[in-house]
Image 1 (tube, rainbow, N blue to C red):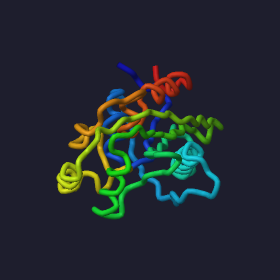
Image 2 (image 1 turned 180 degrees about the horizontal axis):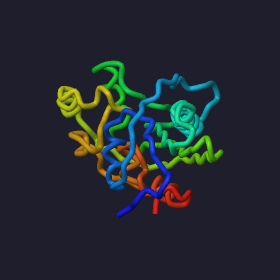
Image 3 (image 1 turned 90 degrees about the horizontal axis):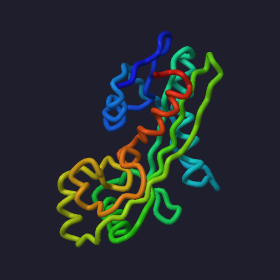
Length: 196
């Protein structure tokens, strides 16, 4: 489908298996180097600004070590009424998050960054998808938590996994909710001449 142009090499600055799987859909070779950065939200930072900054910091940390490579960084957050719902601290926290989201719309925002330090190229953007979760009963929430799936997921659910049954409606990019807006990322890589 796509091919990587001569002289280009791509690194995904992430350890997310979901992002790896999504990027593999393009059918191109890439390396995986997870960065170690501080993902603490700064005071007065909007959710969109947070996702953009963290994705840039992930890409730039890896890019400094590989300045001639194209590096992709991404950060996906679940947002309800301007509150970022990260990975739950445990089962009780996961229960509270899912109770908060049930029967309501929330947003999933993925900030992504494509950079090449040697060519002085930095592209940053954020994609937003609206998600409606069905009105869950407590027993359903507890049963889902019992699968352990929500315990390492932002917002305490995985739309691509067992949690998919809870998602009643999506407005926007599905792959964005999973962790990488593949349409937008592919368009950027094509426009920069990384892919053809």
